[in-house]
Length: 236
Image 1 (cartoon, rainbow, N blue to C red):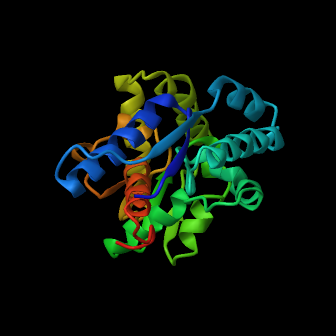
Image 2: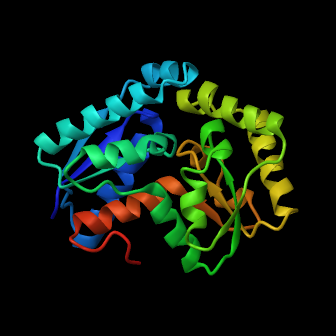
Image 3: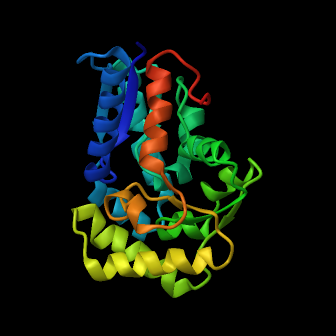
């Protein structure tokens, strides 16, 4: 098996899900308790959020690069950021490291294509909804990606992520708001929903929706497993 480096901590709650998913899938592949060779670097999320508020993405890029370099020294043969928003600095990170970085949007686009959908909606942090560092990369695969039309909706979704879900809090009123935002985009033609913050799957389940949900934690984890097992991460 190949060694994979995980850049986690944004948040640690979703990083646990990555760790669980990858270990479980490798156990199933081998039919026993064979565990994959994983190395983890846990970012300081409080510092990441401070830099986000300051619009200091260069500092965030430097944090992620330093994490990646430490994982390279620990023997990682590929890396992944265990969240969507850090992919805003993916170009800087990818160019600074010697091993490949598995992009979350590539795994997500592949999962959408596997279900033959042409239009999906996307919810995430304000950064990933207002900018195209994830949605644009998905769209490069010929998939139309909708985001909420109202700025107030984007702001509230961002608040729910950063002030509730990253602390493991799931409030019924917030879940109702998220589902309403999704339903508004279903009315605009969305055939599926990308849970484009790795915290949203902690709140939104398949049973809550009438359309397919693409859990970016899950699909990214599957790409990780394919890499660990010596397969092409982009294969099905």
